[in-house]
Amino acid sequence: MSFLNDTASEMITPLLPLFLTATLGAGPAIVGLIEGVAEATASLLKLASGRLVDRGWNHKRLVLGGYSVSNLARPLIGVALGWTWVLILRFLDRVGKGIRTSPRDALIAASTNKATMGRSFGFHRALDNAGAMVGPLLAFGLLSANLPLQHVFLWSLIPGLLVLALLIWGLDGTTLPVENADRSPWRWSMLDRRVRSLIIAAGGLALASAPEAFLVLWANDRGLAIAWVPLVWAGASAVKAIVAGPAGALSDYFGRVPLLLAGWGLRIALLIALAFTAHGQGEALTWTLFLLYGGALAMTEGVERALIGDFSHASQRGTAFGLYHMTTGLAALPGALLFGVLWQGFGAATAFVIAAIIAALSTFMLLHSTRTT
Image (cartoon, rainbow, N blue to C red; front, side, top):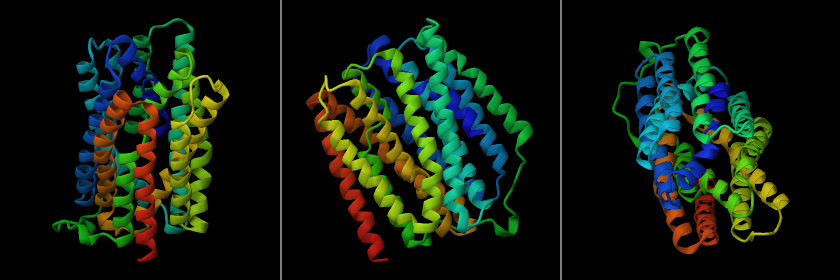
């Protein structure tokens, strides 16, 4: 499901900032607004859907509902007449993501044991990113056939419908047994301290993250042609697919925190490198930094989820995943807006440097909290 869904989603995502700026005339701040609102919307619903799972709601119905909303709304971006239409459709797309994500992660955690939790989430992230590689390649093929951007968006409906077919006929419905359902009022203190520390630090890192939509603009500013954007995006997804599985498995043997610190540290170094890469330094360097940034993201995707699965009680697992996704997503809204405003007002270099500073503070906070746990 995740492979096919990301195939559909990533036919659109790398082209969206270019569609907004080149076709609809929006500026970088509008790109940041749309991406921030989209992720914040998904985040709020991730907590709600996770809580519903813990109260005994059926996983399959929540997952099916979420994927249905996304895959029916997303292709309609192709007929948008202005950036406000894109905002509405992107909002609906993320509503679907918010409904499905926490139930899906809770289902993965419930179907594995602690010794292989990192491998399980790493495997999921690998297939997810493999779909994110195939999607841009399909978009590149369609663009190479001289189809306009809008038609590429409409073609994403086909893999989206395959997702829904697989969900309906390929996934068993599961419901948490009533006797294990958590119906008590939820409190922050109920979570394990390590999970709380990760959620706070991950929120800070989300605030500091450079949205990948801006990496597309960065690469385009440095001479990368629009037709090549889907390929470099696919390449980054391929790197993610290669890195995510082994990184998750390594965390089963060497611990979650060392892998998190390594991945977050690499991300900080790359943000600084992106800031000081000037126009005209060569396409090879542009491709290298773009791909490495994708690898840095993949190093921690599965590990963060595995850590939550490790230390969350079974009856609170959906809520814990929901709170994690909500915190990182809500932080993405001011983060994306701040990044866009800094880019538009002071230039890309300033935006990347400020992001690196905030990311470093979040990493030190996680390191300090784990040393005192």
